[in-house]
Image 1 (cartoon, rainbow, N blue to C red):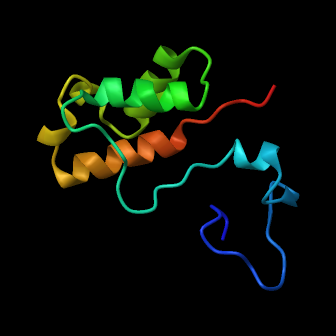
Image 2: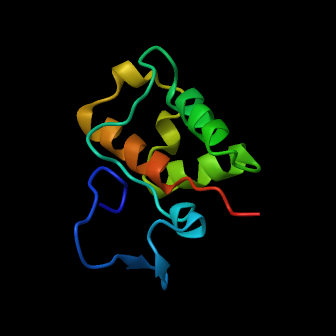
Length: 104
């Protein structure tokens, strides 16, 4: 429900003290439903750059480096996504979910 895949039929959902549909709330959350939608022939770094561009991230290089370090994938940034293990792909998905755009 929080990511919009289901519509609630009762009750309420509040995050950070606001309704979950509020744009400022949605900017603060990331979602990994099953697997990250990555381009298999691109590197981890290039896939992260695409995600950062989709989210209009300011200073994407710094933010990407930060989230890759958080998930311990900084050493694999140049690997092609298709050559990553399942665990690595899951950590890449988490890193993508951790990227967020600061509202203006």
